[in-house]
Amino acid sequence: MEVFISRPNIDLYGGIRVTKDTELEYESEHVKQTVKDLVFHSVTKKKGENYESTWETTVHLQEGDVLLYEEEGRGYIKPVEPMVSIREAIEDLENIKDVGVE
Image 1: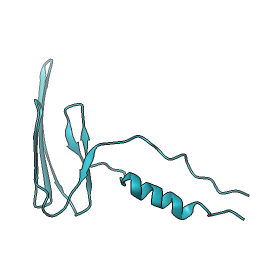
Image 2 (image 1 turned 45 degrees about the vertical axis):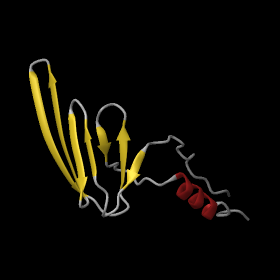
Image 3 (image 1 turned 60 degrees about the vertical axis):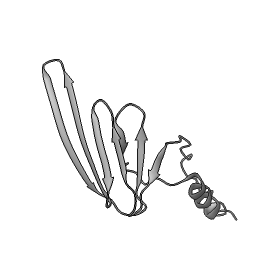
Image 4 (image 1 turned 120 degrees about the vertical axis):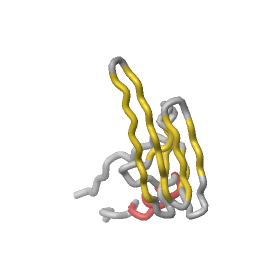
């Protein structure tokens, strides 16, 4: 019997890994965001036909958390799935390359 894993996702995403010293300000037509003292604050405003929406989000970050930048004007987001650098992904795969090999 062999051991299998899902094919690794090779989509690349731009972003930052936060530290306690990370300070960030981002603003676009619909979004205003800040990061300071490991607190990520985002205000998003949308207008459409017959509606107007505003929502605020505050996320308490930990050192090492990743924020991804979305080109579509949403600014930065904290992904639900754990993210690693390319180097970390290669190390993970190297560590398991002989698992299940007889």
